Image 1 (cartoon, helix red, strand yellow):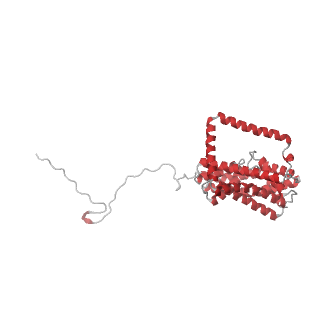
Image 2: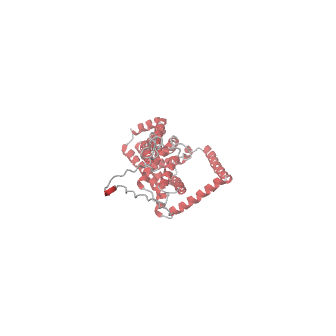
Image 3: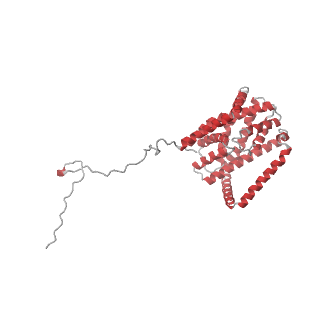
Length: 357
């Protein structure tokens, strides 16, 4: 017997071509895709009804501004009342000096890092950081905003932290250097006995020495902490060497560090002139620098409360009447803190919304 050949199947017509060469449409049934269970999503991939986290964060600065304004409403109202009796040309000059402080801060921030930061966003970040600094404990708000800004710009977190530490160190050194230079040039500009009683010098010195000793003992006892601190110091020293190897960065760092407190002191001098405070400009500048150095260790939001008290005491120690000194301080804080607070909070929310920080 011979093997029977298997019957060959007739060729199938191509899709879209019928018998006889006529074109036709051949329907091909595809399997149905499984439907997604759950609520539909928006084009951005968010569930409807879910509020984005960044939108909530945009409202946080405004809520904090409202809380701070309500808590200090009496100080704010009295300060605005003092501005009505001042000479406006001096006040406008004080507003200009305050605006220049944000430029000085931006220049210093750029000088503390090797990478080139976007100028406009950097300046807007300093304006927003000023508002954040008055809403959170001293230094934390501005530091957090600038740290986030540098990391978004591509600077690694370790180097961003080192740049932040370098900025704080340069600003502290510049403020102390200006205070020492003014005290040497004008030794009678401030009566330190009235500002710091002799009975308080001993306890303050003992507390400072005790804090240093405790910190050293903790570093010696905790190995992980010691390793982290040493690693950070190596990174910070390397960043400082890189910055100072570029003359433009070093000039920006130290020039901005000296300009920032000098512009702040100039603002106080201009407000004092506007309200007729009978204290020399050098005495008001020394009083401002001494007061800000004294309250640097007080962890209050933006120094609210502590700065006012220290400034009044320092201006009285410089020879000003208590009533006029209080009026000057209140007007000065309205210009430097309260007027920029709401626009700064709005800028902060916008930067968070636009993912700049």
